[in-house]
Length: 223
Image 1: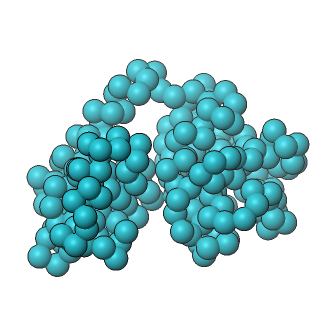
Image 2: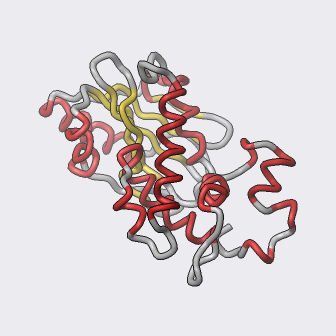
Image 3: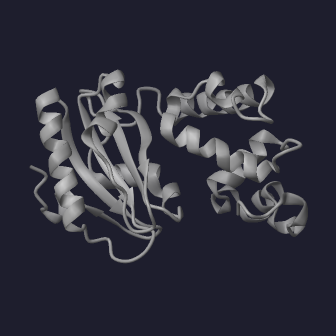
């Protein structure tokens, strides 16, 4: 998608028209954000600009600020405020007292839109003492088949959230959902670090566009 310019695309495949014809679920994150942006800049087509912004939004989650967005050429305060207003409007209507995690399947819908990414995205979902979801962030982005992550990268923002627990997750762009030895080792390393910090690792979820695997449900030891 990032290689395509809007003006060269068939009308039916342009974000707004595609949404009208196929519904909002048919659009990628990039296409949805392009609709909010409206248009690009002299340097960047709107789809290219949307893709650049997604990297920042993935990393910051709901904590993204105007300053994070206006650093990009083609994004002034007007566009930045539209994006932030859209986030806040939806957040207020998802659930007044937050989204509560009870079982792995509860969290999969929040992650599914990362399943079509070509590279492996390692995610961290932070939760409070009531198991309400505080934030979802991309910690690292790796190659097509692996993502390296260190506990310090995972807990840096989690501590700011004052989270009591976290759920780890990553997409598998291709192949089996079965965790690799590295996946299991990294999970245990993060869980041990969390134990020292008083933050519990509740689960690690591996997912693609169709299915998911939960360490807890599969009986894979986290500690």
